[in-house]
Image (cartoon, rainbow, N blue to C red):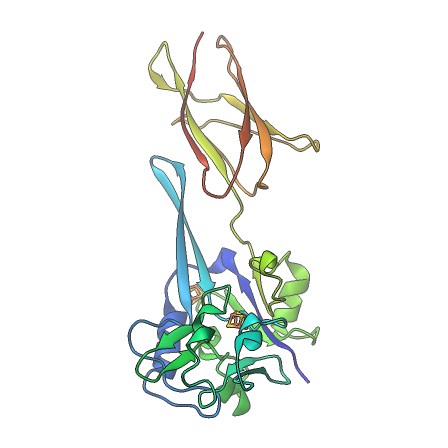
Length: 278
Ligand code: SF4
Ligand code: SF4
């Protein structure tokens, strides 16, 4: 039996929202019993695009797009939270909320650590992405969102079949599960998940101008060393960092160097203006 999963190549996502629209087109107004009842036109996105803005400099905002949907967990908290077997995992790995048994089970909406279950007040039903199980059962090779993605970001297939595109991409990339701390063992993997970043802009105090060609070095206690020079706007940036403490050094001929310990975390990345003095 297949183990259906998805490998999401975030480097390819352009934030076009085609996947979200395809999901709406497939599910709004359509019941696909026994795996799903219709998705409301508003208020639910079984496929959602999370946009995160990261400041590289005042003139450069980097936007990361992350498709967010049911992770089809092998250790699914939603299954544990269900009464009367209202949520179950099929033999192909797809987790289904039974649209009949789950009626009235509002606790399901809060059970998913990924926040991808929605409560349908009108139908009194918890709902989520089904990987378009009704289409797969009809012989389709992939869900609508994957079919419609123009960028090759969404890669669907049998993760246990080494020949499937998803399994190949999983092998080739360093794709990882999202939020492994939830310990839910997802069958969805992401390549290129945003990592913490450190950036800043260097200013020469005596000239009151941005400092080009300043040597910037980042080191850590494990021996990592990365370096760059500031651009014409005095900007520097290091991406793909870990959440830990680094030492940041700035050196420019004729100016007093600076060395600072900086605790990098996902929320704080832009250091603002750093002033060098003679
Ligand atoms: S992502 Fe949430 S809804 Fe999907 S299987 Fe995991 S716990 Fe259940
Ligand atoms: S269709 Fe593909 S490229 Fe467009 S937002 Fe969705 S995942 Fe990203």
